[in-house]
Length: 232
Image (cartoon, rainbow, N blue to C red; front, top):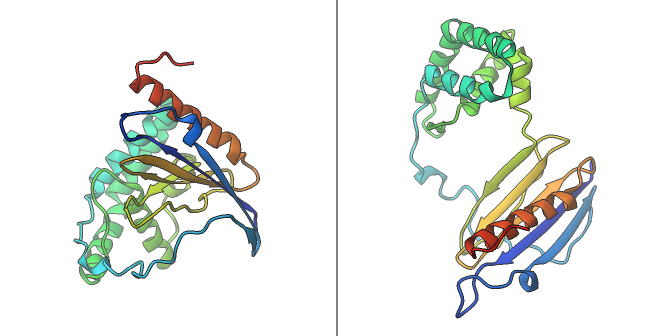
């Protein structure tokens, strides 16, 4: 099993009698090192008495977005990452997917969603889960993947070096998770009334401590701007 390094930093934002106070005395660093099944840690989150999926059935079901919208958002996300020739290639395979195999897969996905009311696909501004679902559907049926999925641009945009998530609640101190790629970072963050914090993890190929120093510097810069101080 690969080693994971976890680093946590929390910063207090308020003190009684002041809106923002000096940060340095209240910043604290906690490190956890996990290698295989052996671990040493000075702090653990408490076990929850409420099962993780307890409220799942009460969540509203959201519709599957239109395929045209997902392709449009996909291309908009690719545009700043590619040069003109690369973008034209990616645009061509995306439009071919939209008019051909993608249309058929999308119809099958909509039908599958109607027959499985216990699941839900998230709509909105996202496109990655929609295209992933279509890819999974094609793979599960033994179909060869469309060139949209073998396009280098698709692989690049799905290589998520920075993966973040949060669950802000008075019942949760701070959470975290592993990076989704070998050279990435997993950032679990919390934003509360009087403090913010993050729990950062990475594999040994990345320097998680250096990354956290950058996070610390960014927070310091934000504090300085809020206090009207020049950036160092």
